[in-house]
Length: 192
Image (cartoon, rainbow, N blue to C red):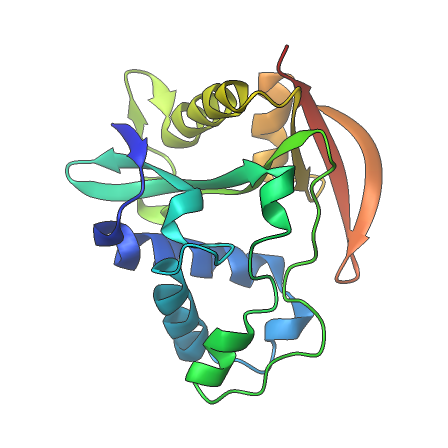
């Protein structure tokens, strides 16, 4: 079942985001242990203006558990999100990084898909002949259309599973970007 994330999903969603951030290997998070990052994400999940807080999330629920999550928002909303995580670092008494953990990425005309990931236990399972990430991508496109933005945008590393999924849905690469010393493709999907 596809639905908006709630406070109850905190444990499951924080773990999925943790795994995704570990894959992305952000330099600003190198000095943070896995346990500290897990705590940061769990605490941040409850904050509405945190980039990975529950208001920006939609989940795919299977047998009562969130097994996939997508984080997205209109480009105008990105400026109001906490990308420095300063309050969270202070709460855990960890020195915050000098630069934002996640740099702003959305273009002005976009509804931006920041993260879409599936719990590894469910990565190779389907429901009604669709993968969980396919269900979530379809829901994300639907949400983006309802926002009134003309384009759905996202950044992916070339050759990843999410890049392949985006290609299946018809996303088109418009340019290359560098974030945190890594190359990303900026993909766009017209919503009109």
